[in-house]
Amino acid sequence: MKTNKKELTVFALCAYAIPFLMMPLLYICLQNGRDTSIFANAQMFYPAAGVMLAFLLARRQGTPKRFYILHIAATALMLAMSVLSAFLPQEGWLNIANFVIIIASVLGWIFLLTEKKTKREACGLRLHGKLLTALVICVYFLAVKTAMVFLSMAMQGGDSWAEYLAYWRTSAPWVMAVVLVPNFFLSFLPFLARNTVGATT
Image 1: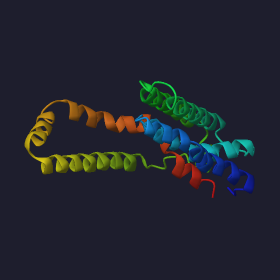
Image 2 (image 1 turned 60 degrees about the horizontal axis):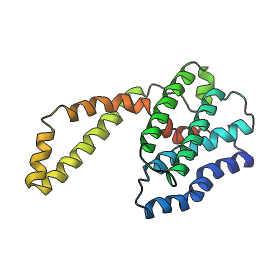
Image 3 (image 1 turned 30 degrees about the vertical axis):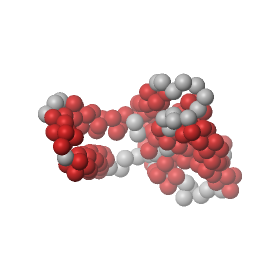
Image 4 (image 1 turned 135 degrees about the horizontal axis):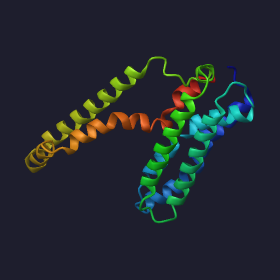
C-alpha cells in the first residue's frame, strides 16, 4: 500500500511529536523521583497508533477497523495515565497500565482472529507460521536475561551470590519462567510497531 503525505504527517505527529511534547512531564517525574516506567510503556504504542490513525482518517479500504480503534483507544489511555502520573500519587499507575495492556491485548486477539485473513494480511497482522519463532525468541530472551543476572551475582560473590542461589531453590523463578511465555502473547499490543509500520511501505 502506498503512503501519501497526509498519512505520513499523522504518523509523524503520533510517533515523534507526542513523545517530544511529553518530555517536560517526564522531566518533572525524574526531578521528583517518580517512576517513569509508564512513559516507556506508553511510547511503545505511539508508532503503530500513528499508522492506524492515519489509515482510518484516510478511510483506507480493507483495514481491520475494530482492531485499529481498539489500539488507538488503548494508546489514548496509556497517554492519559502518563500525564496523570506526573501530577497525582503514583501508587498503582503501573499496575493499571499493565491491566490495560493485557485487557486490550486479549480483545485484540479476539478482533484479529475474527477478522478476514485478507485484511490481516494487507496490514501485516498475520503470524505467517511464525508462532514457533515467537516462542523461540521468548525462550532465548529468558535464557540471556537469566545468564546476565547469574553472571552479575557471581561477580558480586558473598551474601548476594548465596541469596541468589537460595532464590533458585524456591518455586518463584520457575513460576515466573512458565508465566513469561503466555504473558508475551497476552501483552503483544505494544510491540506492533515493526509490522504495522512496515505495512505502510
